[in-house]
Length: 279
Image (tube, rainbow, N blue to C red; front, side):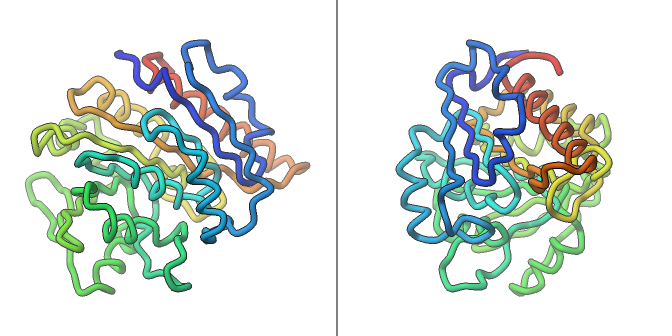
């Protein structure tokens, strides 16, 4: 498998959870430019992002490409900040249980539940969005709230829609679980191999495999890794990747230690695959 992203790896620690994980301490020399940002001192970051915190975070950015670990789902708005720096047309491939397209609850404040809506409205280089594993009911509610609807492609099983003139595609979990990932790859290879940015929220997975701090979907990690390997081996360029969905930081309990180990293991495995290794 071809190596990806060896040159740039970043960890953004908002909750302090990464200090209790070990995967990043074992990164090989090939990790290249590695940066760890301790952001536990920042206020205005839990679920909603204040303008003051946003300004401080954006000053840290050096590159969009590479691998970015961005803490729990409460800080998934980081994807919006990272992709805002992409200076060419691209597609967003989002693995998530939630569509993250709610209407903002507090004016223009960016939030973990509204960041994708903001990105579609503001980022003209974001040409289309592919939602992988997003819950059927939640996806339908988002479209209905804005007067839109999904159309199901009888041949592929993919859901097609649009919002703010941007094409949206939803890939159901059962398709992701099959070995016939060719449907996914064929779709992603359209538009002249328009490059991808991958955003992965671990709440898309079954809570039996990886525990997060949100309600979760049912995708298996093995099904996901099978798709990820196929993407890495394909021809579609990948501009960058971010990973969120760390568990609640509740030191001391047996459940917490188990959840911490699950997340630590997943974070190490995805890094290995993206960098050309087997996991």
